[in-house]
Amino acid sequence: MEYIPAKHLLHRSRSGEWFGTDHTMNLYRGCCHGCLYCDSRSDCYQIEDFDQVKAKADALRILRDDLARRVRPAFISMGSMSDPYNPFEK
Image 1 (cartoon, rainbow, N blue to C red):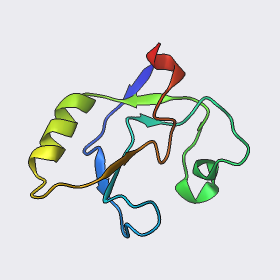
Image 2: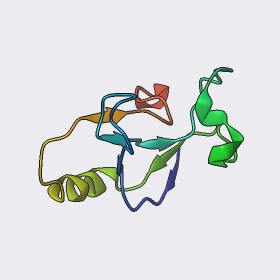
Image 3: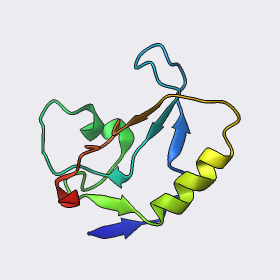
């Protein structure tokens, strides 16, 4: 699996009304399922080779740093732009 650099894993949601979450977190870029209805494949996100899954390098350290900056508890949704239960995790 290819690894890509990342600055942050937690991203603040603009509004918690839609999904009921304060932040989103994606450990991967891309998805191998190929679902035709997937919104993440949209051209507006400009993700080339969306079918090729790439893991975010040093994710545990980045997540620890992101969580250390949070002042109050929050709901975090996983997998808004990729499958949170990636088959590569077998």
